[in-house]
Image (cartoon, rainbow, N blue to C red; front, side, top):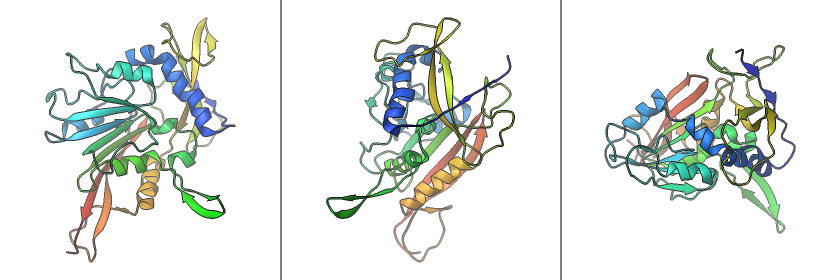
Length: 298
C-alpha cells in the first residue's frame, strides 16, 4: 500500500484546548488499541537505558503505555524509571508494564508542568511526545506580560527545558525522540504533498488512527469513519532536519547553559550540556544530551 499523504493541521484556537481535543482525548479513547501496537523497544533507546549505573533514578516524560519502564531487561530493578503522562488510560496500562508482578511508578500530569525538584533525576527520556505540542511557542517559549500595572515576565518552559532542569546538573543524561518529516520506506505516512518543498521548520499535520477494537471507556472525541471503523485524528508537528537540535540549543541557552563538550579548563564556573548524539532512526529524529557543571575555575 502506498504511503498516505497526511492532512495539514490548522490550529485555530487556544493551544491547551486544541491539544486536549486532538491529543489527550484521542489517546484516552484509543489507549488499549494503541498499547497493543507499542511493545518493542527501539534500539537506540534500549541502549541508552542500559548504560545508567545501578541505583540511578530516571523520568520517562510522556511514558504512554510504559514500555520503557522495565528496561534494561537484563538488569531488572537496577535502575528505576518513573513514568509521566497526560492519559489516565495509558497510565493504567503502564503501571503493570513488563513481565512479572512489579507495579511501576507512574504520575498523571502535563509534561510542561514542573512537578519535580530541580536536578532530582539522573536521566530522562522523552519519546514521541514533544511533537504533540501544538505551537513552536509551547515547544520553546518565554512570554512577557503586564499584570496589575507592572511588567512581569512569565516563562512557559518548553519540554526540553523541563528535561534539562529535571536531571542532575553534574551528570544528567537525556534522550529525546520526535517524528520526522523524512519518513522511511516502511512508513505508511507521507508528510509532504507532491508540490511541497521540504521546510526547515517542520510541518503541522493530522495523523489518523483507525480503531480496530472497542474504544477505551472515557471521554471520546468525535471520530471520523473508515470502512465503518472509527478514525481518530491526532495532532503532530513533524520535525525537519536540524529542528530538534536547534530547539535543544535554544532551551539550553535560555537556561544559561553552555552547549559544548565539558571543557578541560575554564576561567570561571560553568554549567553546560553536551549534545552526545544527533541522529535519525526509522522516521524519527533524536538527540542525546549530557549535563555537566564546573564549580571552580581551573
